[in-house]
Image 1 (cartoon, rainbow, N blue to C red):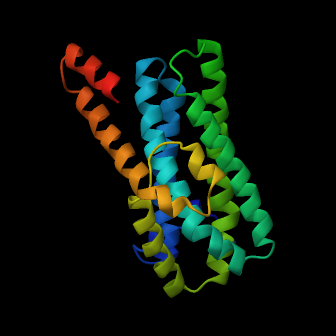
Image 2 (image 1 turned 180 degrees about the vertical axis):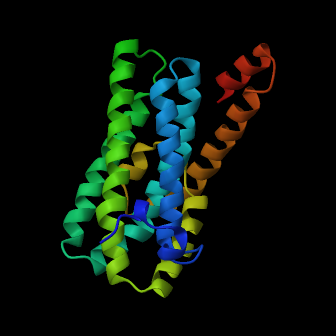
Length: 208
């Protein structure tokens, strides 16, 4: 098996292949994680928000589309899914704790370092083991179908950590739409706050 990192997109299938969609998200996430580790203070807060906007839609799409495919096509698929589920739960917890503005700097630094390492390890495992295994067992046409479904879910998914999604995975579809609307509205307000005067920025931050 060849790592996704060692394959160009034409080797991974069409633009809609699940492998191509995953690799593009991974590449963006790695760039953001590099920025996260070197940008302290307020700049790090913004990078962390950008990381969440990639990680949480990606994770929700994985749970809805990738994980069922792993269970169906890979040996020990259920074990692999359980391992990924545990990692996602920790990521959700870490991202939630990092939203606390009263965190001590040393504790915040520790949590950022743990989140950084956990996400990088997840990317490596997916690109070097999980997705190449799927590539070897699923035909390209099916990978394109999975990629389309995965992208649809990703675009409709929340962009922030929500404990309710971790606790009640079976009923996630019932809370998906309101959480997505809430998250993306907050994303727009935060984007606006970076281009308005300080007084207005403060008001927008309080409103969010």
